[in-house]
Amino acid sequence: MAFSAKNRANTLNGVWFVALFAIAALYLSELPGFRHLGISPLIIGIVLGMIYANTLRNKLPEAWVPGILFSTKVLLRVAIMLYGFRITFQDIITIGLPGLVVSITMVTTTFILGSYLGIKLFKLDKDIAILTAAGSSVCGAAAVLATEPVLKSEPYKSAIAVSTVILFGTIAMFLYPTLYKANFLNMDLKTFGIYIGGTLHEVAHTVAAGNAISDITSNNAVIVKMMRVMMIAPLLIILSIWLAKQNHNIKGDKKTKISIPWFAIIFVMVAGFNSLNILPKAAVKTINDLDTFALTMAMSALGMETSFRKFKGVGLKPIYLALIMFLWLIFGGYFITKNVVAIF
Image (cartoon, rainbow, N blue to C red):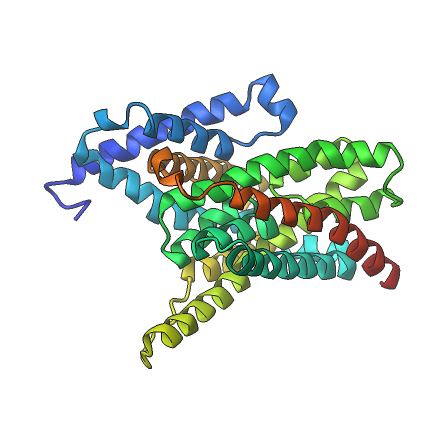
């Protein structure tokens, strides 16, 4: 056991070691260059972890490894639960039905399209296809992290999916404001905010793109993005049921168990509690700061478990898949947003 009396000290050493990487990632994310690009500490954390994994990892005491695994599993689940403190149901009501319809439509279509094309067209590993689809459809790296425990996939597969989020999310963050200012996108400020929130990958990407236009655009973008974040709970539950049916069809086991991702359900419960406004805003901010640190630790630990040797054989297929979803988010998202706003 990782935290038995015999192993506790070494496990904690592994956790503290991961925490050092998270501290470094948070520090780097505050530097002007990273802040300007809107690069979150989660992304920096996994990059630092991957650099370490492929250089000095063989120097790590084997007894510390359980601490790293604890960060990728238990700490990750806790962080996803606490992510609910970033959302209130009041925000959802404020943006209205158009934002909700756009969020549901984009998450559903992008996830189904990405999973289907990844598995059927590109013949990708099922886990890589689903993780890549989750990252594009919901909320980037955080969605990949939340989906990994349901799939029970290997860390390097999540790293591949996260890398696509970094690439295309960053491109979109600069592309959207540029297209809008060049009058290529025929939308008012509020509608453009819904479009950004409904189609950009990371929360950080959404904030940066929205702020580049106006406060109205930014506020609408963030609220719609948070609606997409909330959909991670029903998405993971449906995915868990689908995986159980897949196992039943393959193994013929009538007692195939459905693994309910309780951390996703608690995430929604936390959002509901946050909507009651019982805690002071300062307390919620502190919780969110701690949650960001916990997520950064999970990403750093994920990077530490990612060896480039495992990428061999995967090739550029995940990039091609992510590119198709990127184009769908841009063009399909534009069409859906314009029509939904016109209807409602």
